[in-house]
Image: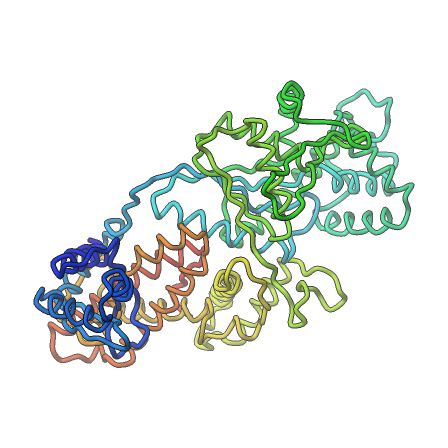
Length: 582
């Protein structure tokens, strides 16, 4: 039962009865709460089209809206804004119909098959704060899209080949030159372990990078190792396989901690078998040509307002590039998966690169004409200075360290009545993730934002802990009342606070639809905050457990049950878990 859509359709028919034609009658949240729950703004377009005073149009429509009996209150504000308050009976029917059946609200009229590419961590390097937004935004969009009714497949798409592989192998070779992986005459089976831990890997890459930047000879050796690995060097392949497996175990554990899960754990290296097919596709179409010894594709268009350079496909030394592997990956995915849309999440700064890749894919007919690419760019998490978030010594902050910092801050705020050490640890860990994830989702996706540890761990305001605490408190209320969410207490009467809460709950389908249309998780992040704030007003003004009127008490409990169901579903899509207590 989508009460908003039904009401919009009824308003549209009423407007027609008044003699006016409109395309849609969209209910917006009323900007001044005491005037109504919703408002409609189509009066001004009608007045313009029919050359009538907006107030006159509003008054004509107001009369018919009142006659319809759909609304508790209909009033006009300003130059012709019509404010509406739904009848309590309509809201009560809505609540009783959707309890334990939220899916009835979320009927997708145009189902799509989506392939999502997000995560993108580099193997053999530690996950740092720069990887956070892709994981959080991607996971939230995936879950919201599934909730909306889309079929979604997602891939982490590891950076598991390329320059970083050459860097790591170079540094290990320097430290352990006698390992058989580096012996060109070695003919036995290679070892399955190396004297390097996953912790060592976190230090090896930055060390090699620093040396290579300062010494061109070292950089040239790194390039050679990288190319030889791509060409199938047996020793390097065996060593890299061990490094990858070790690193991926560590990376998966951090993604799991962030409640981020992928259908596919594939990487750039998985695309290598398709590179030959890519090149045999590009050459006959004469899409590639030589430029300074390298092979490139022209992807510019006549109507480009800014320069779009050619896409580098094969380096002058014959090595592949990110683009080669991304195009080969598209071939691989197109063979295996049906997709209407391909969603790529990456930092805003990669927008041009992905536009090049998308254009090259269309030119080479790697995907069908009716399939579309979407680049979903995002801003950066920064420190108080507005620069990328770093540690005190200037390094990029490790994600595990960020979680630990946040957890320690949460521990200082936790209820002291939670004395069990394991329980405090689990709850603080869960709340730390909620703080980090919500802080990452609430800003507009395309904007940078400042990470403020004190602000984001507060139990009040627009924070993950505030949302979680509110649900924990609501669950606690049900326990004290001796009921569960499943033992629904039918709602028979509501006060103004309950009516406002239900009116906001009724807009859930609209907010979810906007989120998917615009691909902004911040829409749902703001919506769930408003929901929680509305419930907390109800909670503060209605003494549920001590209510003497049994019918009203059961209605209050029913409202609480529905609130918990809605908010838990939304927070689950954000990867935020609800502990039993705080």
